[in-house]
Image 1 (cartoon, rainbow, N blue to C red):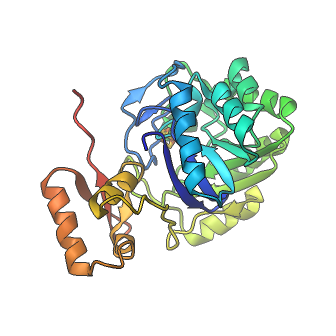
Image 2 (image 1 turned 90 degrees about the horizontal axis):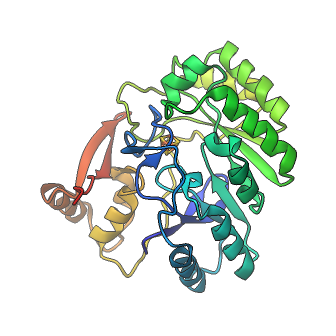
Length: 312
Ligand code: SF4
């Protein structure tokens, strides 16, 4: 499948069938904590990257095989609202299933009336807000030059007025950047104004785009959670792994996941009951030699990530 993956066991969305409607690493931010690495295509221009019907066909096919799905989640290896077919895609999905549709977005394009209108069809929108002042926004999210935080927050306000379904905000906390008491209380003030239905705090649990990015201490996280009145999804130990196509070879399965995010080596060891540790290690080394994946160390753990395909 090219656009659909999972179902992914999601900490917020249960068993979630993922849809990526944009090319890899295409985003209007290049967050310092992004698990996809630095953004390759930093753009704020919406495009019809793929025909809507091609994506719809894959969703239908996936639903024929998978019967227990809690959410269909449009997420993307980048920013899904950059997809010009977003509204049509949600509308098409709604026409053949009652499964709720969620959209995970950085929220930057909510200032665009058309994007807000397209998102009205969804059941849950999960935007992100990591900063409430421009300087910190630029440090953490490294947005496209056309984006201004004030405009984005204003867009979020308008969206709240127009959208009566659920808004679940995520705040990604980075040590010594946005984890101070002052910052989390200031974010909370904005979240109250936005009347979000839920707030989640998260931390960079997988290797981030910038190796100097660090996770706040447990004490700081606990305080931030209180300040933001948030639920925490920052569970480093319990990283969840999505279902993969069991008809695919182990190599293909590893590639399919590591293209979307780094995968911890100890978790790979649990993926293939028919292979022992030595065999899996040999396979990983073989894939690494072929230039398919690379190893990264983060938080004293070994993670494997797909290497970027060379552009033709
Ligand atoms: S974390 Fe999300 S918003 Fe930030 S660069 Fe990565 S894909 Fe874009």
